[in-house]
Image 1: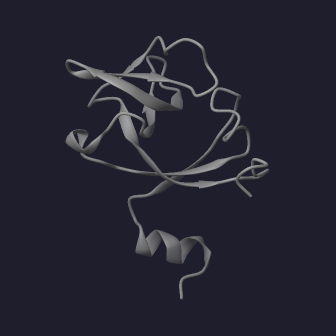
Image 2: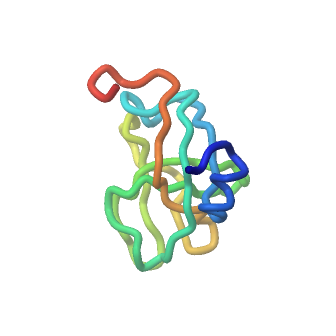
Length: 110
């Protein structure tokens, strides 16, 4: 049985953990939520996938893929009315979210 961070990293060496900050992914994910992010092939991305990417200033953003337009994905936070100013490309994609750990679980998802 695996326990602890070191054992987890041995089992899943390419997965990184990122702590969420902000309200753009409410009501289900917000500040304090931990996201496990894994590298993925560009061809395996699909509409609706939550991904982490780096915007033009290098900040990591976790939002959902809305649609593919040519060589980039349009993304948007679940709680945002507008799409992001940045797009996801092969170059700025960090990975796809493969696990979510809540500091305060949503009422309908304990």
